[in-house]
Image (cartoon, rainbow, N blue to C red):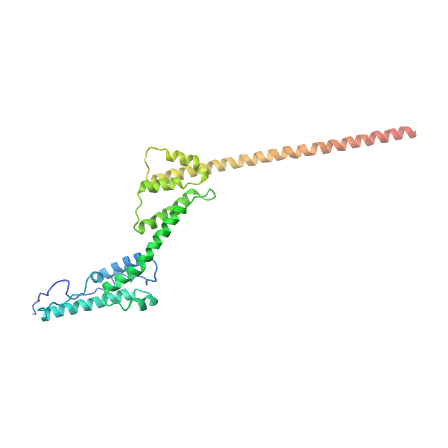
Length: 263
């Protein structure tokens, strides 16, 4: 039975790759590099290759030209070759041709960072602009608009920009539509602080109450309009009918006089 010889270091030992642990990430097409990198990192971890994203190429020093050291470096180069090509195969074809010149996985990974994380900085400014420009309207349900604002806040957090919960609560209150002015002032003057979930519950209750009042108010307005319309209609008809009677009366009187005169 062959004895197990100890290698120079564990990090330089050949890497045994595992397969079918997870599906490959979708090919990166230049959008949302952070999400793609997270998926690729997980995929490479299941293959025991993730460390090559950050490791430098091992260099043999003078006096280390022994068989074990040379074998360890060759094993590292082989594993790095596998890792680099896993990453390259995770790129769209047009990007593959651009980044395939990188010699190691670390160089490739850092090149992707420099190219696309710089563009992500512009995305951060865009998200901040969307948040600042967001205004609620009276024509839309408030809760649905709050949910839209929460999605923007979620994207801001995903970009690494942290906003405290008290700031989020104050921002949502400040962006309530004009018809909610009184309720907005009420919330501003509340001494007890709320979290986002509690605020949404309060807004949902208030919106339900407003909708209920609107449903109760609408039939009464319709009835009032019917009564008012009927009164106006009757008022218009009365003078017309009385005018006819007076004309008929005058005609009858004239006819009677003529008839008497002839007699």
